[in-house]
Length: 372
Image (tube, rainbow, N blue to C red; front, side, top):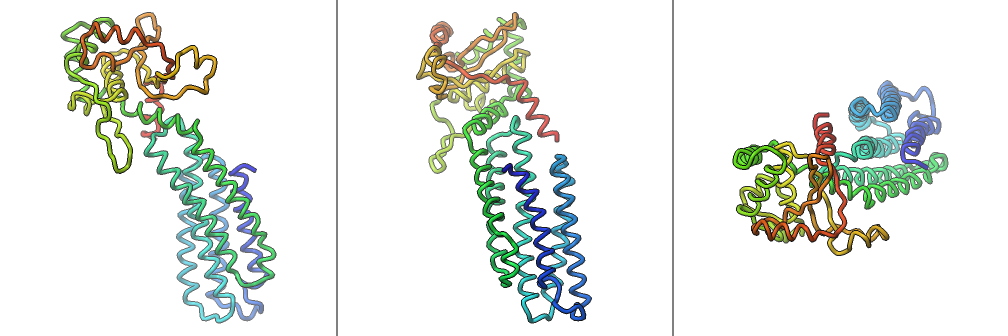
């Protein structure tokens, strides 16, 4: 059962739940003449919340994120009104206790519905997800899963055996299992690999002030055709930069910070990814299209051709487009702090396989996402 079908059925089931509670006397006292204006007011607001949830479901299916969120905001505001009014009821029977339990169940339920919007965005915007944003959304979705579980636990607190029999709480367990499956899908290797790609490419910045200054200086010194620009960038790497194995390492989190190109310029060095990001930024700044590439130096190209599952990136390089629009592989690390001839000899020995991603294409997706 798909996640969104499950959510839809769950929403409908919750609305039915409210009706069941009313039928069995939890939301409506057993005798009509015992209904007070305050209790009637609460019932009216609960019906309005159901309508807000119905609007949310329609907007969600139509990918109208803002409208869906606004529907939930309306529902949450109404729920706050219900909570205030319920606390002032003088009823001594199960009515007030079960009503309070129902309100407590509503809160995580509405929060979880809110998070399902963000999950849907993850799936629709995966081409522009970077690591930080991805982690935030996954964490929020995990919280939503836990909120659904909290809803299940609150529903179990309703005292009437007749009502609990009609709640069919196994539906909630099914939903939680389905959400666990979705979390597993979000954390799959295919998803995280693409997120990693976007994280690196988001750092490439040909418009950065320091990058533009360096690139135009190189162009003025060496000329503006492709070979002259490439020679100028390679010479800059040879005379101004060094390879640093693990810059900006955080031993507490065991996470290595990926440098912006201006940081690499200021620090005068970086690791293979940092150098590739800078090289791509400089090349793109003077009009040379590039691809950012993950490389497997432990297996030959021919090995991975026969067994693609062997590919495991441990290095970063770039590709650039020549005047005939051929993509040529270049390893910026070969040229950092070394003689150009030695760097070229190193570059000629490349026999490993690479997975490459066109910088301009992915950055357009990233910019589109930011503008939205």
